[in-house]
Image (cartoon, helix red, strand yellow):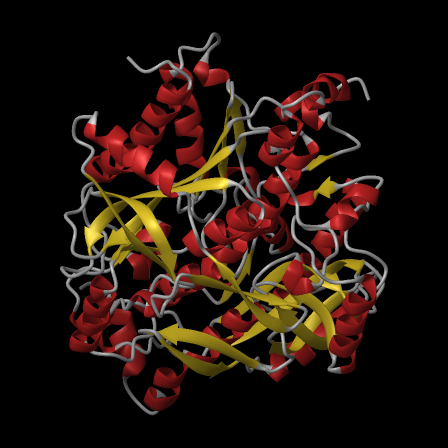
Length: 316
Length: 316
């Protein structure tokens, strides 16, 4: 393969071990012997696409639930990095499927993952294989999301310290062939602290580091009183949220534990950056005006964009 | 409210109890006292939309993962029911959000739910509240999906008998305020048998009734050897699939248990109709040509469309 040549050159000499360490790993020995790898839900394949050529220069991967939001982020980062070309013309790399959307802007990949652990899990399996096939190095991943706040003013950005489950444990339960195994949800502390430093250099991006609780539904699992099913009282809800707060939880969303667990298992540096849309101690419904919500949702984008610009030496 | 009048008339007389029984229920006493109910992920609200007027005549709700596929289904059922108007002009009722898409064609509502239990769960909470606010009656719900087959030829349609979890148990585990509760995943046997009868009246829709296993991921949980993470052998995979087959499992997908559980809890008749895209005993990757996969995905649509036409007295 012609695309192997520059990689092989990089492998020579003293930097070999360091180089190997920074490559994107998969934890699956079967992949090497596969003649073709179809990344079905991304509508890409090792046979039909030259993945090293298309994606080999990726250094930052930003993922979020909403396809529209991740397209907006790709256009925003295009402007921020002052790249040539028209940001309006950035096209969806996964246009062969409507499962996910993917946009590439220089060294930044922006893609959507839908809602919930299973949806982001499918995307992450195929994304990590993509980064591996493309021989990417030194990649940092960010989840940019929305969340319910726990004791915070709406609009606060939470950079996740520990991603925790419904019992406030920093772990993710994965079923493998009918057996439940537990994985660590450790995130990169260096990246989190760098993000907090970035927020202090920006106007109007109130940011805290705190624990993020990941649930498997939006209503009963998060203690909402307004779903189609609700069997508990307002007092029981507030008691659960209070216990979460005491365990260090500052926001609730639906993807952080598996995102942290899969990145950690594959040796990828990762951070979770979510804005809170409401304070759950004060209510359940998201009733802020549309333009206020839009501005809130831009805050993680502005923060991560600043981080990327600094890393690339492009921050003013 | 002007829209209440015809409903109140229906409530009079001897049919009162029968009428009440057939209404869509919610299991949440809080909803009655809420001044406004914002169905956030559908971009609808009881204050800004006249839900009884928009949705009061719905009798069939068809849901599926892919937005494109559910739009295609709405256009297909429009033609099949010989309704007036241009099927190309059917518009997305949830255009204010990109979380889900929703199309209404006469008495048929077609909407997307994304991938995985959490994603469909959010949609179902808000859909069931919508049907309740709209005062719908006698509604039947169908999930039309794709799946991996277990010991079946690709292209076979599976109408679900029991929706089972990773241990082949017909139950759904729901976390409520940090505690795990178990819900029944019973589906409507009458509707399932009626669908099987429909398949015998159609050409080229090979259909079986069998159990459907619902997993929370596409790779490790379904025993795939081709994810970014894989810690088991081909033999262990085949052993798990064989045990599933022996427990009556004929296909694997990612939404059926919560769909069955929530419909059952709210007294809604429901069926799961998924086509198999591959036989998992023979492989993991979906490699069939695009046009073959497109034809397979139309089979649940053709089957459910025939069911709807028969119920409406429109079948030839």
